Amino acid sequence: MQWAAHGGSLTWLVPFGVFGAISWGIWLVRRVLSAITRPTVNEFETSVTVVVPSFHEDPDVLMRCLATWRHQAPDRILVVLDIADTEAQQRIEALGDPAVEAVMFVHRGKRSALGAGLRMVDTELVVLADSDTAWDEGLLAAVQMPFVDPAVGAVSTRQNVYRPTTSIWRRVADWIIDLRYCDYAPAMGRYGGVICASGRTAAYRTDVIVPHLDALENETFRGRRCVAGDDGRLTWIVLSQGFRVGHQDSARALSMFPGTFRAFVKQRVRWSRNSYRCYLTAIRNGWIFRVPLISQLTVMQILFTPLTMAVAVVYVALTVRSDHPLPAVALACGWVVVGRGIRSLSHLRRRPQDIWLLPVVTVVVAFIALPIKVYALVTMNKQGWLTRSEDTIGGEGQDEASVALGRQP
Image (cartoon, rainbow, N blue to C red):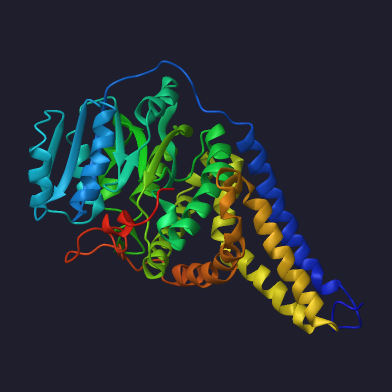
């Protein structure tokens, strides 16, 4: 059987084999390192303040998450509300908890709210949490443990989607996010080089980030003030000073994710734009050379994601040119799906019932994510949150009602 149109030659497959070998090699190294990395376990604990920027959050979502933060008894919880969020203010004050304070503030974006809260912190550590993120039992104790090492400046946490079975797009998001926290973050955290401690929940040494709040609040990229991407900026503020950014898999959180395709796409566009700006800034400033090699490789792979995704799509398309296109296309598509399944074993071990989603996730990653990544790359300096606005309550497709009728995960 001839697999190509050019005299039966297979030479056109060589570039795809090279790209594939590099991609699989990097993945395998990270996967092995992640598999042998274990959470830090000790008795270290210190003073902690939780800072939560909240802009027009659904009050039901906020209060549900607040209950999980309060349960773990940090020294203080500062919920930085927009001045229009009076219902949330009243419900927080009605708790009568002296450790919880509703801080009313004129939001000028999430970064401004973070700055307002961080300036009020007087504890050794500060945990930044999103207003729609709940904590699993023991998160606060676990996230403090790596700070026994004075070289650790920040710690990321393990995260998943809250009630993923309530939407196919939440299921897909939960699948994709599992790959990050099972196959990527532990490997980088092993060497203190996590490249983005997600803002959904991350812990920092207060004296490492507070002196640099101007760099957070007033960051610009090619002349435009940055709105989103605060977590990446804070992470690289820590890394640029020579501190380690670790990962604590035993500190686990559940975050609200969009339940609609439209909001799913908007969220991915925002995240991709943030990544491009963040990592290109790290390269431009030379910070990239201060992190471990595994972290540098991960940054490069993220930046070249549009190219690697395009290679997979072109590979499938070129099989149509073969002398026997149907079996060739079937073989190519089969390999793409099987390859995605192999890379998804970490998620499928946790949720084997999601195996039926494998073709959907494959299509999303290879064909939907590709235009999203390309669009985000060429519009990376277009600023905006996309899924939240002044005239809506809660994130788009992310209010409490959107999960109320779904079954428990």
